[in-house]
Amino acid sequence: MNRFRFLSLRLLFPAGPPKRRARPASPSIRKIGGFTLLEVMTVVGVIAIMSSIAIYSINTNLDRIRADTAGRRISIALNYARIRAISENTNYVVQFLSRANPGKNESMSYIRMFADVNKNGTYDSGEASRIEDLPMGIIFDLNGPKDIDNTVVTSSSDRDGIVFTDNKLTFYPRGSTFEKGELYIIPYKNIEDGTDKNRRAVSVERLSGKTIVWVYDIKRLDKGLCAWRLEGE
Image (cartoon, rainbow, N blue to C red; front, side, top):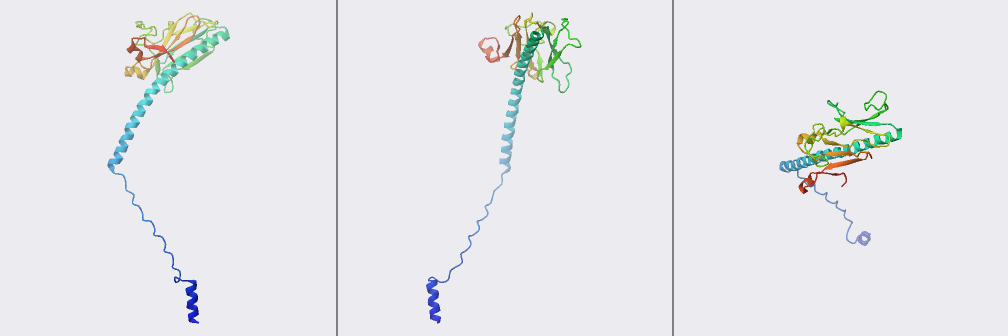
């Protein structure tokens, strides 16, 4: 009987009773090393340098964008006044003004357009009007470079950047104006820096009343050309 039991076990388990599977060994915990003080300081230094470059680039581009925006905004305002003069069959006056002490949210320069119903050239109570502010920090100015005709400006009244009699012009019902003139603008910050690179100008043609936007391009001076060129040229 015992022999039969032994043979039965050998037939069922030729290599002996099954062995328990050993559990896989748990992976060893990897040691993670920290950054050294030198590495941290190096990264901080690189970030500081890149931030300074980015801020300088943003400020430079911001002045250019404001100048471009101001030039187009003036052109749009003049076209608006011209169209209103035609559609309402009345004189429309455009005044170019500056604020001596602008508030926190006020621009330094602005434009007033009004229907000159009584044709006295002055804004009177009751006359339809519209105010168009220039971008913050933009002023009227031509104290330095030549004008769009490549002429040195000597008149003190023109150096304020508003080359119109009494700093205004009138559009008539046919859309024409008897005055030919220009407006010169620049970010006030550029005046403090002593640079002319972001100057812009808007001219108005007599009779047609057409407006043209100009860009002051310093690179043209190196070629002996007038620094002023048409926008988009």
